[in-house]
Amino acid sequence: MSAELTKTGGALAIRPDQTNWTPDQAAVLQQSGIDNQVAPAELSAFLHLCQRTRLDPFSRQIYLIGRYDKRQKRKVYTPQTSIDGYRVIAHRAAAEAGHALGYEDTLWCAKDGRWQDVWLSEQPPAAAKVVVIRNGMRFSAVARYSEYVQLRDNSPTGLWGKMPATMTAKCAEALALRMAFPHDLAGVYTSEEMAQADNPAAGERHLRKVQPGEGDPWATPTPQQGEPTIPPEQKTAEDAAYTTDPAEVRNLYRAAAKAGFLTATVQTPLGTLELGQYLVARGEQLAEPAPSGVQTGSTGGDEATGEDDVQDAEVVAEGETEADQAERQLRAAAAAVGLTELDAEFERSYGLPIAEAGAAQLREMTEILTRSAA
Image (tube, rainbow, N blue to C red; front, side, top):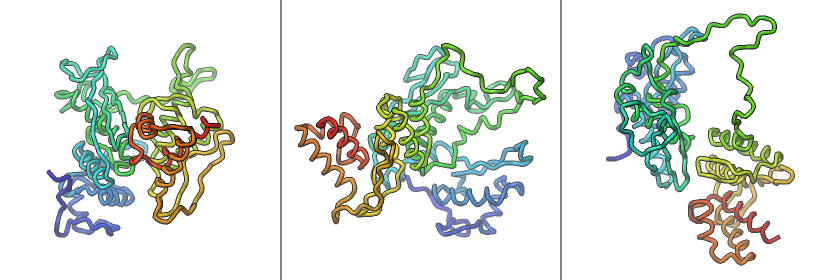
């Protein structure tokens, strides 16, 4: 079955150069449940999202769902699709980039913390874990049942009551796909993830004035002695995993370099890595492709000073890409230290062959070899 979506023809077809909804399109959208409370900015953003994802709202592939917001005193509209829509976008983006896309086995977690690859209990799982593999890079995500279940009168409703394990796994898959394809899936959530947004606000707190000498009951509690806290280097890795801005990754790298965290071991979507190695890989993943024949530099910087080592518009040899130059430098460094099995060593370290690696990863290993020879 082709991954290409069926496109609506005639007056409802969305053109790539379109900047506003046509009257015919707006009329059909209104019939689908979008009322006059929708803001013009929400409609414009929805049009842009449909163009970027190439999902068709008139074929019910993507929706704009309104939910009443007490603070804004109106419906606030959020784009939604199904997990099938996510899969179509991910497979299409991977195919266009020439990347392989795959999954590891889905796992479910029992309340006692044990993971299993099939869920047979009549009770819902505590969580589900899905790992998406894009071009050799692992993107792992865990979804907790309690955070996504849709409730009515404190009981699961709809498919959440009938297939809790499947619904929890769909939420975990959506999280993992969004990490693997941040540019393609940013700004749109799956209906499985958003079901809990319809839960009644029965537990909504009512604010009152805090009396003198009384602590704020809604303040974030201070960790007690012996209570586990997230180390700053792990927090840096998590911030890098969730951001879609390569400039933010560069800032995280500089801050980690100044704090001396770059060699700390952290858990990442790619597995257990040194923080500096992961930040370089994450920056390479988010970076826009450089123009042919122009080197944009790496994500990192000097570890001692924290200074950025980006060299904008450095011209490389004619016909030689940035990755080609980085590979040539890496092989020269390997020869200098007598490393005869460079290709095997690189694939063991980074999980992909040199031919598929990014320039930042190649430079990182070159730096490691150079330091070892000093």
